Image 1 (cartoon, rainbow, N blue to C red):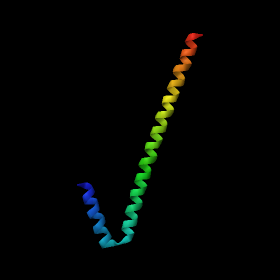
Image 2 (cartoon, rainbow, N blue to C red):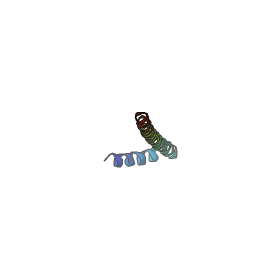
Image 3 (cartoon, rainbow, N blue to C red):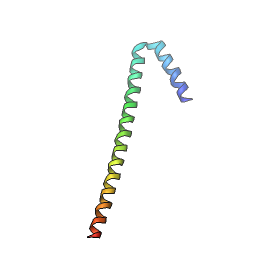
Image 4 (cartoon, rainbow, N blue to C red):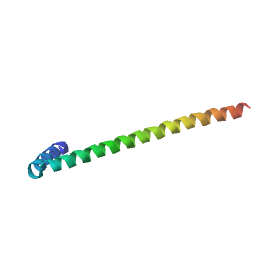
Length: 67
């Protein structure tokens, strides 16, 4: 439903204000998508680094116990 309203809104905006509004809306959408992608990538990277650090700490603690 919301997507349909966005399409109708975009169509009305294009009819009333022309291509400038379409360009601004497309830019805003692209920016939001890029931001979401960057955030997801950064989060995945942090999780991967945390996992690697946990594995290294676990291995290190095992070596200390063996000595």
